[in-house]
Length: 521
Image (tube, rainbow, N blue to C red; front, side, top):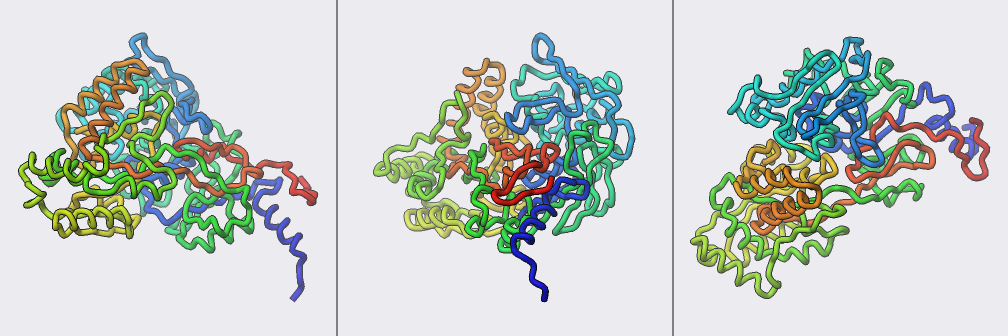
């Protein structure tokens, strides 16, 4: 067998990934296995959020570095003097990937399908600030009363109930991208071979383990898209994943990594993430909808010990944000917690916790927190707590169907504002898998929307404390964003708190010299 010098092999591998001629280059990204709902109305995972930056584009999009809303399909927008009417102007000549004209009516019709009660879209409630949207979504109002109007092909007018500081940031979410007219009411796109999109890439091929995307030549900003194609891989084989990265065959690992095998330490990126892992009570069983019982149960669990093992312990639902005052559950000192719990059980009509049903805790894998809850409740209250395991990716669907009393989620904010964590507990929110309903809480959110910046944050903190002190939500930790990507070779990838990195901004960094090696580009 002919032997080839190792240095030549390394250079060949590198050039095959990031050479000067990028015409045939596919930027390769590694994910853990995931269920992809190609219709953005039905998607809800961070994996889908990242993939959709390639194929969809809303009126506004995030600046990848600052997360501030910047023009997307709309070239501009204007706010009325009262900040309750937004007029968007679409870019001239903008089209779908099949050449059809993309109009303001496409946005209006897509949003109305998203809001339709029968769609049951997870993110529909984010449009509740629009006049008539919540009423239509919940089946108490008419579609004719939703104030989203396409004045002409390029002008969309949206009327809000009241000023909404976060509304433009909300519209950066993929759920509010337009969906092609023939597919808006089709929830399952798995059998469709091709769907027109409006983003920087189109779908070429897809399978459970690989997705190929090609540059959309009709995208309005196609000249700025430097990478001709994307290759998205899905596997839970971390050994194969790390070998692929170390051999320059994978450009970016988003999940499924084993950092101990990383041969390029400079490629490790660990950044603050707008994310919280928490446990919550389902309110579908009346006994767990009683805040005194929830708090009593929580007081028996050693949360400080549990959190002490975490990289970034978290006692608040909302991660730290400049100018936002931190909330807490207000627990008494450790030595007083058991007595406080028994007093609350007595008050609720369950002396010493007698007569309470055995809780069912649902988690996606073996879980030390669930075991700690079970141990505390079984030992002190004589319960027989059940732990149910529903593995990923089916776990996310399972928490929407019920059949449990306590579950866990890691929630990453959809926009950089406390409301992304707090709005999901509103009684009418489409994210409210816990069926939590509290008129006082709803009023605090509503009142906060009317206030200026710092006063709004203070009012939102009151709402968060109501959640925490009633132990509807029990935060555990805030997660960092961990990525493996060698930014010496990649331009346009910026750390940000949402860990979303639009594919259109990525490109090879040409002219980078490997020490001791002369590269010919």
